[in-house]
Image 1: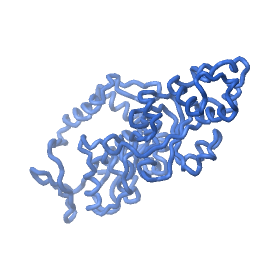
Image 2 (image 1 turned 135 degrees about the vertical axis):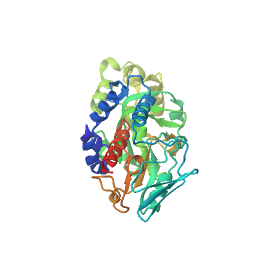
Image 3 (image 1 turned 180 degrees about the vertical axis):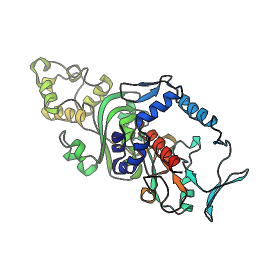
Image 4 (image 1 turned 90 degrees about the horizontal axis):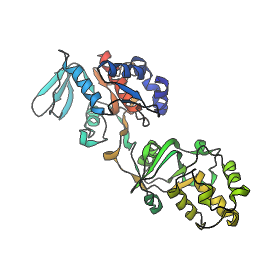
Amino acid sequence: DSAGIAEGFRSNGKFLRSALARLTPSDVVQWVESEGVDTKIELTGKIFPVSDRAVDVRNAILDRLKRSPDVLIRNKAGVTNVECVEGNFRVSTPEKQWSAKKLILASGGKSYPGCGTTGDGYQWAIDLGHTLVPTAPALTPLVSPEQWVKDLSGLSIDPCLVGVFEKSDLPRISAKNFSKLAITSSRSSLLFTHFGCSGPAAMNVSREFAYRPQGNLTLVVDFLPDENLDSLRNWLLLMENQAKVAQSALAGKVPSRLLHLLVQRAGIAQDQRLAEIKRLSLQKLLGLLKGCPVAIEGVRGYKKAEVTAGGVNLKEVNSQSMESKICSGLYFAGEILDLDGPIGGFNFQSAFSTGYLAGLSI
């Protein structure tokens, strides 16, 4: 719902309340369906076209616009400059110059530059008097130098809990304070890749590594977020498990490829029975299952980012109308603003709602 969407944007979520009140998530679904695009709700709660084709939503929007006599769509006319002269906005393209009393900047961020979102709008906003919160790629895969991570390429763990921690805090992490001590955390699926980590869990926390590429940060993964550490230890100490090797006793709890590597990292022989494993080695294995540190050296950048963090400072925009507080007649919508939320439709909803409110305000 609208409150849940706003919450996903952390402290900036309050800025979205007015826009979300005017166009709610259910409003978007109803509108898309009214334009002939059937939708479905997946097990994750995400809503997709029944066709699984995003282009069907885009085409529905364009078809709606084409039917309106008041709308002119100009393709293949890249904007080269935006300025305001004596209360009139002038938008320049290679072919001609357009003038208007009011203007909405909805040019996106820097993510996926192949789509044309190369960050041009930020400079136009600056030229029109605005300041920017520094930008960084968000919802982007993580790059790890660790070979064991790359050896697991293609393996997905769902669910798991990941957190971003200061390296100095690593000795203090426990099951009880994991989320509280973490700078940020996410519970979802994690995908190991040939370069590091991807999947919603990793991508949801990537902005921290993007903003602090040389920072003292570590990714920590709880591969069994639904398992209590004490219960897991007691399970391994059961008499009927003592004659088993660790991989047999833990079979079904985590994938065998992952378990094989964690047993190895704990210094335990693959054929060593639980009864023969030293207490410290068993504790290390449990620690890796419930809080495995993963070194991260960076992110994949804007080319692979689903959204751009940072942007036009929200303090300079009226949340009730999306109009600039600095330049009368100028409005903002979407990712050009300092708004970035988690994976799951949050950023789409933000763009739809702020765009809708800006349009109504004009």
